[in-house]
Image (cartoon, rainbow, N blue to C red):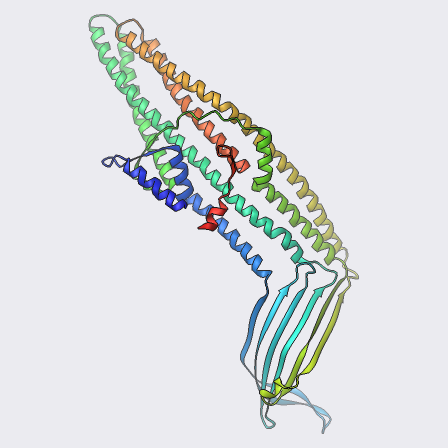
Length: 492
């Protein structure tokens, strides 16, 4: 779906572009959509998510029974071994040659609740001995079922069942989080170009205005209407305006190149920014934003994962520091014979039960030290997690408060821009007819330029704050829905 969206967006942009100048007009929505679809940052975010997706798939697969075919097609041995000669009552060295082959199937199922392993296998072996007393033998295990269990020790399956689903959920939310971060980057590059483009347009207008005013000043100086100092000031304005125009063109080209590089499009294209209209008034509740952040922000899942992994380390070191006991039991059938068919007839029962113990007696406090270190690390992680939660919550509240103020600032900046433009035009016309001096004209021009920059800056701050709130809460307050990019990837 995203691929179709980007192609559609590019097609519309290219159709509305000026073909001769290879100009593409970009809106803010266009820049955000293209960044989410084709930027290198977006590709990296998607690949990171897919890595987590396949890691989770591997975890789920490991919980299913596994079927394995084990083969030893050929094993040849020729060596000298020590043997007891009963006739002479002494050990002797003899040459031995043998050929061995085996094959078998095994099914293994891990049991999460107990941490044990249930297995079922079947196999056949062949042995051929060469020499003076050559012989061949087959041995088979038609079927054997068994179970192995660590009776007291650490159960990794239980912890995997808690941690792995949480890690995958975190990966999904991190994808959405990273995509919102990419949108913020797109906004920064978009408004950097918008600011540079506006400054260039102002420089072009100021250059034309200064040139016109200088020509008018020359005519007025001839009739003694203005002094030579005022005429030189007008000429200096022309020189400064020309230098400003060149510098602003360089800055605009640099900002254009940076935006094209970020969007991963042809850098030879000329990009033209279309500023967004004044947004509709939107007020966000800080309490609601905090609620969504706690539910959706992957940073909270990361903190929870860190605590679980620390508890896992405590559990492992605690159980490894004490007595360890394991049980392995199996029941099945086996048979041996000189021919292949014989080993499958009248099999004999095969039973095996074993228990092992490991009891630490003296280790000079190594196990105890590891356990205490793990417990202290858990305490540190829990305290750090709480501090991080407070920092995230504080950032959410502060960003929401800033955003709720930005709407009014845009309205004020837009009004100031219109007033500054009107005041400059009035002052300019009054200067032309000789009713205003050069200082008033310069001040009006400065105020007009500053008002234009402040308006663009207000728009930039508004949209940055809005998308930062989206990233922190993983919630779209305009459409009133949770943001989840992971589902879109799976559908593709």
